[in-house]
Length: 411
Image 1 (cartoon, rainbow, N blue to C red):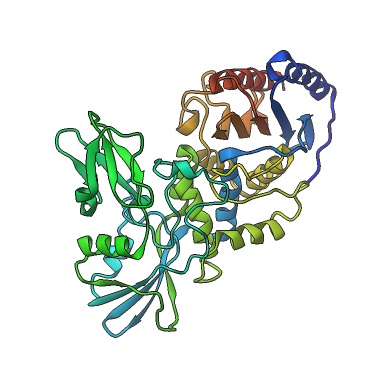
Image 2: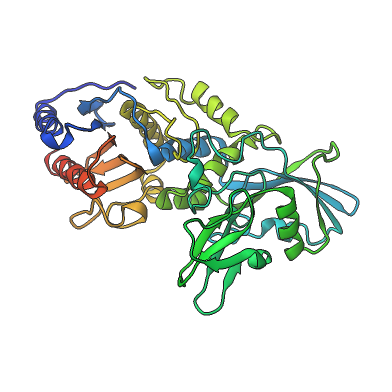
């Protein structure tokens, strides 16, 4: 794949958009834009397209691509083997088990007929947090720990419409209601629910063997034993939910936990020893070895500011997705402007959606990459990245929307 700037129409559009990107609004920030027509290989605009940007949650596009390359049509929930009346489970990183949204109970149903369960959870080589994650987000809902056998989305969900409600119920006694600037004691499963609040709050749990034993005992009393070493038996993968339902949730809600766990799950197809690092390296060295600029890719979610991608590389990956998936399936997985997910209130169509894309937001950074439908029915692939601005996100989105609408109406 290579990009060529061609055609009078493209040259006129290029000139107008370049003038806009050189206006005073953009002068104190770093902006890159690449717009590409995959049908006729027409590069409509390439502005700082080969320079590196902090992608934020645009990183989930690469995680999406990885999952679609490596995983089958369903998620491997765990690997298991059986000996006598005992079933041995090895975690694969599946994030859906008892998750507040998915409520998957595959593992619970699987162990019902066995007297004993031995569970291995120490088979993940990644640290619980990713490189470059902000340490003071330890209690924030968007920052759950990574683990090999997640439960409840690795968060405690608390609300108080009348009386205090907690999922999982086993941690109810660990909650205090108080005025506090934090939601959890650092490195401890002691949670704080804001005084005077009634709405739901999600707080990351500290994942260790003691917590998991407690959680398992609450749903399968005295049955599950956490064991760091299991017998050397032949393990079989056992599936849970359809892959696309997880991908759609990750992309629409920009769910960091699902993104991180997806790379871990993908790595489980190679070995019982899980590693999102090895998964990232494998994809970069194989399916993505043709990227024009090699990314710095350090996590699955984009939480880290260490990630570095160029608009060109992101468009290349989007083009691979466009060539390998049906348009209907692809546009279902991506949020639609003015309709769904993180784009529900932005980039609205007239009247139908014209943007199917993934947003990426960190402090002073906002990017949008995906697909644009023109009024003439063309599908354009774009990556629009903005770093280091001091204006409000809403102003950035408004200016971006003006350019994207011009593309929709003019190409």
